[in-house]
Image (tube, rainbow, N blue to C red):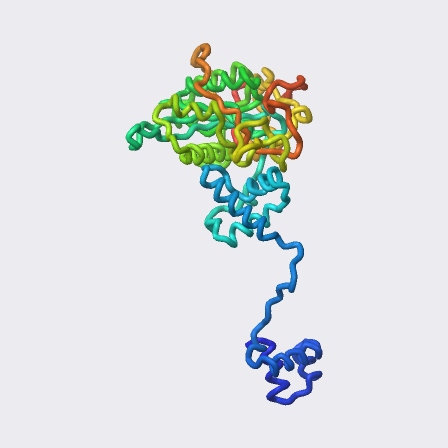
Length: 408
C-alpha cells in the first residue's frame, strides 16, 4: 500500500488531524493537505504516484537530431561499417556540426530498439586496457578467413587475410589476401611493412604456428620459424598473448571484424583473390571509427571515409610522440615490456635459426586505413619515419639472450 493511500485514509476516513498524520508518517502538512485536495478532486486516481518528469526540458535533444542519429545508424549499418555511438557522434560533429555525447546517442538508439541487449557480455570496464606510447612501438598482427563467391553466386574458395596494425595509432600498415597464410608469407608481409613504415620496437601476436613455434611441443623445445628468425635478426622484441586470451590482441581482432562486415556488404562479392585485394588497394573501412584530420581521441591519415566525404585521424600526433625503434641490445639482453602493457612475462626461448632470410615479393595489396582518431591532427603518415629519437633500451640487469616477452 502506498504512503499516499495511508495518509488519505487517515485524514478522510479516520478523521485524524493533518498535523498528527504528518508527524506519524514523516511528511509535511502541506503535502497532506495537497493529497486530500487531490483525492476530493480526482477520486481514487490520487492514490497512484504521479510522474516526476519536469514540465519542460529545454536542453532535451531535438526531434531533428534524433531522426538524424537514426538515419546515420541505418546508413552505416547497411554499408557494413561500424555504427556505434562513438562513430555516430563523430559524424554528427564532423559533418553536421552537432555535438551529442556518447551516452545520449546510446540512449536514443536503445530507446528506438536499435541496440540488441547482450547482458552476457563481460563489461568493458573489467578489461585491462593498454596502448603503445609511440608509433612503431608495437605492431599487432593476425589473419582471418573470408570465403569468395563463385560467378553463379554459390560459396567459393576460402582465403585468408593477414593484417599488420600499429598498436599506438590503430593504423593498418598492411592488409593482403592469400590462399593460405604461411610462416614465409608472414615474414614477407612484415618485411613489406617495415620497408614502408620502418622497423617496430616490438610485435604482439597470438600463438599461431605462423607466428611462433614456442608451444609446438611440450617435450621438445627448439627451432624458430621464419618470423621469429627475422625478428631476432632485427632486434625486434616478440610478444605473444596467453593461449585462449584473444582480447590481448583485441585491436587487430576488432579491425578484422569491421573489415569482414564491410566486405560482406559490398554488392559485388570477389570471386578471385585478385578481386578481393582490389578493395584493399582502393580503400577499406577503419576498425572502430572514421578517419579525418580532427576528431575525438582517435587518429590517422586520410583514407576512403566510412561515409563520404570525410576520412578520420590517428590517435596521436607523431611529432609529439616520436617513433620507437628496435635495438640490437634488446635482442641480446632480452626484452622489457612497455609500461602500458598488462602483466608481461618473460619465458625461455630457443636459439637455433631456420636459415638466412630471403627477400620476399611485395604484398598483393595494402590498406592505408585508420582505425581510430584523436583531437590533434597528424602528419600524412602516422607510422612513417620521424625525427630520430633515443631508442628504448633495456636494463643491464635484464635476463639473458634467449628470452622473449609475451603478454598473458
